[in-house]
Length: 204
Image 1 (spheres, rainbow, N blue to C red):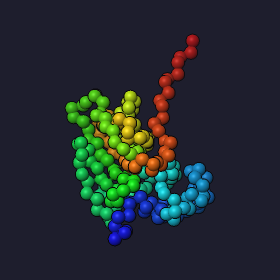
Image 2: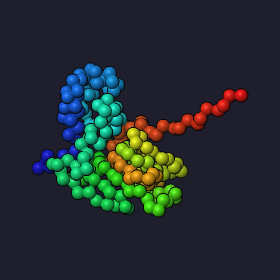
Image 3: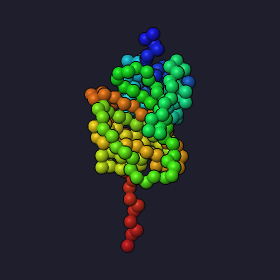
Image 4: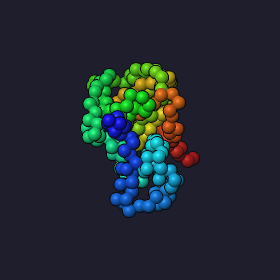
């Protein structure tokens, strides 16, 4: 019964080990590629270290896989869990965890807004902390007085007591991974949207 409520994220360790071995890579080689220490990688594979976005992002890049593939987030979810997708505020959520407390993980799909709506998304506040990673499409994130557009491969983290809202900013559905945690359970992610530099000025 305990296995039935084990979050999908705990299966990342064996998946990481299988990927590494399939590519014939040693822990030392992977450490050199990702900048993650050998001891941390070993603990991740054995389940002794909790996976976080700041660890998973460089690992996904090193293995050349999408982040949702790395955490085992196929369209129907983990076959041991059989999550039921649900719709809220016009968005589809695929649960990746079944436990009621602690970290909650979802694959989220935002349909194209028709007709196109240029107004900022409605903002809400609640207790907790949120991390999101864009898999595909263009995601509009209204965060306090900031109005950002995130594209595939970009991530954001924020305290959910800050007014926030998301919307599809493109002409195709947006897919993203979303993780919610209670206050105090932070992942210390430091991957944020890269500021776009202005074009260089022409010389005299």
